[in-house]
Image (tube, rainbow, N blue to C red):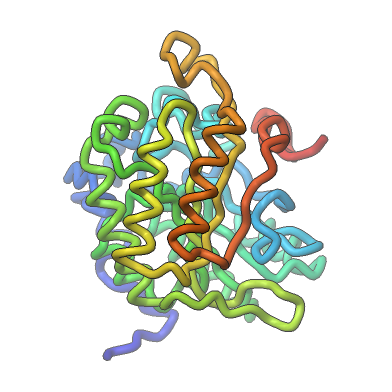
Length: 318
């Protein structure tokens, strides 16, 4: 296999890829260098909404010091229940979006200098060339953080193949096994098969073991997140069966109970309600039956704990 040096992004990650954009599964083909808006309505700039320390990720990702997260703006899914809707909604401008590469890497370097050793990119699926440019500059400065790719799972396999030498830990969602639910809530009826192919590629690259350092922090591998939705237990059961059957029950899973109804789902039962403990128990029972033993189950009381405010310089402050 041909390994590229870190100074040589593959064509799929080069800035020229933005001229006829097929970076994510939407494959709009628009010219983002000319500001032509595709589905995600981002251009060839960095489109960063925030760079901040985040302590609320899984223990193997955040650790005691947190992770330096680059939150990208806009998204190639438009989930009606998104907790980050202030920055992910494609119908609004990205707050504080005018970062230059130097400013972004200065901000990252300052956080890494405090002892944080992980650099996460949140919602990178539509901004992979920008992500590669940031990592390239971080490395050029002699910094070697563990790079975490934190995505919604709606990723293009070809882009992921190009990212193999840039990403240490994949942290994808597997949101839906149900195409109707994917269409209704995220505007992507093809999500189940697109995400299945994306996760299979991540799995090919990293395998089923999450490699940890002496402090119990992830250095290589993948962690799959699944958020249990109210009234959609079957979606979750089938998602877990896919992960166990097509990938491996040795995968590290993060099963989440933190669903919080947003204003956008107020008129859309059953999603206008929080998740019930009984529903979550059904899903955790299936997880155990399938033989998953690695990962985290979220506490039912966590629903109110993960609501950032991106109008603040530190979105996750109490």
